[in-house]
Image 1 (cartoon, rainbow, N blue to C red):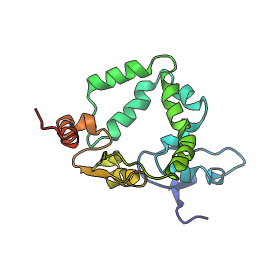
Image 2: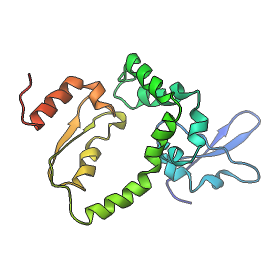
Image 3: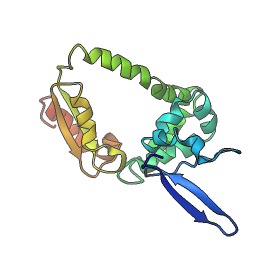
Image 4: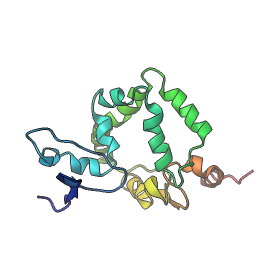
Length: 196
């Protein structure tokens, strides 16, 4: 078995259950059928253990069915947990986002963004084969949680020659909403303009 699978047992009274874990963060519980064991998920677990929502979003129709009428629960999870603080996205902003994503077809459009990633990779690889982007790129990653830290700028440096930026302290994934004034200052400086 791969060493990254963590095997453990839970004693719950009359039953002792074997379970396997991998990764960290919010749990996704995968239940096997009979006569299988956890092993039926052996090729799924590693994929989910890293940014798990990607795999779910790639499935055709399934995420739409699971989130229909529950957009607040699903999207609220990301708003609460991907910032540096649970209130990084204001209640007012969440209300507006939910208003938009509750419209017919809106969640499907969002999931299709993820479904296009495989083609995006192929397109990007073909484009980069002709050389990196030359225009200036400004990129920052948040220091907390799902903010990506330096991996954000490192990703851009693989495809562009003129990349500047770094890490934004006290931010998660939602930098423009967590530190809007700071973002304005950085953009004005990047565009060569002085703050008003």
